[in-house]
Amino acid sequence: MGKPLIYEILEKPATSCIIGICSAIWFYIQKKNIGYSHVGLSYETAIEGQYWRIITSAFSHISIIHLVFNMSALWSLGVVEQLDHVGLGVEYYLQYTLVLVVVSGVLVLAMYHLLIQRFKVEYFRRVTAVGYSCVVFGWMTILSVKQPSSKLDLFGLLSLPISFAPFESLIFTSIIVPQASFIGHLSGIVVGYAIAWGLIHGMTNYWALSLFGWIVLVFVFSLKKSGALDLNFIEIESVTDPLLPSVRFLPSGNGRTLQMNALPDGNVEIV
Image (cartoon, rainbow, N blue to C red; front, side, top):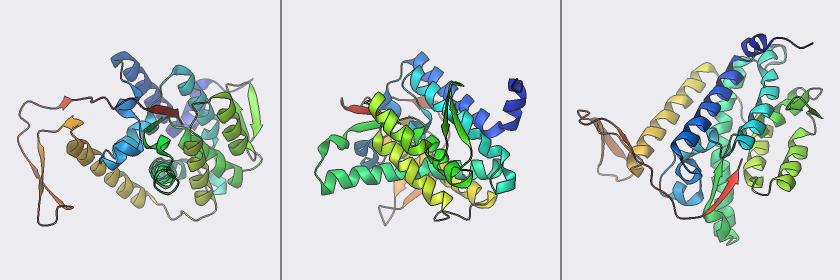
């Protein structure tokens, strides 16, 4: 007989919080009838400076099945939080989750850029990606290297050897779910191997907090610059170098107004 759920939640606090955040965002998206084009990441929106979508796309899901599949896999991967004895644990999990969210999102855009500019595949110009799978595939990969004897449990019914799970899942989802983002999942695997093999390393609480601070700054200022969110207390003005903004704070006025601008019809990929 397994442990009571409350004990498992206490053993996986970071995983539990992330699942709660993703679930709350899914509920809000459904309640407000927000489309994937409002929160997803695409090449076109990125070149327009909407960098905040790297974050919103990662934590947004377009269907309950999409959410349940990702969160079920993430719950199983939360065992990372309990592996302090092999150099993992809660701090490692939080630090490298930040890295996976940002770097895998940037890698997706880099792959889109290569396919569009080098190989002239215009399809990827307007593909919109949403979902937490980049991070899920990243942790699958890290765990397959660090703890190859582990199992990946899905829905409490299917158990896969973790050593094969990243590529098994990559092929399985590509066949079963045509909309699944092969590039998004592959990006998570690539970044996962880079972390597991030490190509990306040296994260500490200091660097994690610094990275988090930069994420917040870029998120807020790209929201302001793109006009997606009206932040009345912030004004960005050009200085001598137009690439370098100056920032000053103004009275809040009428407060904040959330504005959703629909994108032209395109394609959606779930990650």
